[in-house]
Picture 1 (tube, rainbow, N blue to C red):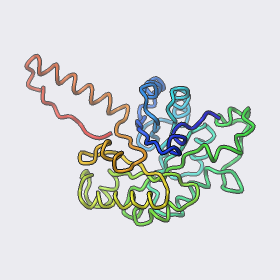
Picture 2: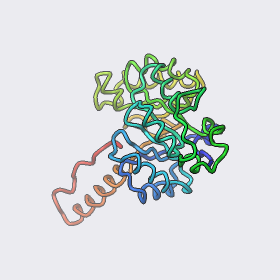
Picture 3: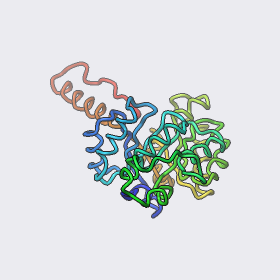
Picture 4: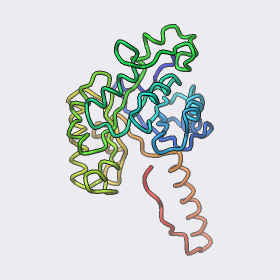
Length: 268
């Protein structure tokens, strides 16, 4: 198997810097990989791509040095099985709130007797269509399994979730966590920051990796300094949007257009 560069870096104590892939354009994904992002988080939850689109993005990323991870639309063993067959370097499941849900994620990634993933090695892209004879024996070590903590209940159960064998990382979904805790769009509210700090401490105590997205008050630089292992600040969409707004704003200012101070959108 191609080495999982993200998992190798994490095992060596190195932080990761990622980019959300929401356009599902292989050329854009390849370019982001060549830019040097450690991981490309292919976003099936909020993006519009299909499984086939996701597989094509993973093909484009192969060889760029970036690991291809996929955020699923839901905790669905059928989707997990399909993406594992397509060779995802890792999966991230949203809205994991209980250890039972976390166990279901892990089980869907693993072949029996460790789990319940369906066996179709001979046709799976992940096994090089059956050419890789060591795939079944090595895939567990290769795969990065991430559970998103995005609700107050998820924070309450974060320790039990982290203690599930096979969960490699907790990823705090700060936008949804802020909303669920009654502070929608206020990612830096003291109560939201307290919940973030609680999950961060649990990850460190249980020896699991921890990731999140930045905010105005906790930039990606600050989060890395605080001990986060993975930060994903931008998406292919937001990078295009922000540069486009900046360049058009500069043009309008130069020619005296009153629209020069157009609002700059925020977030990935």
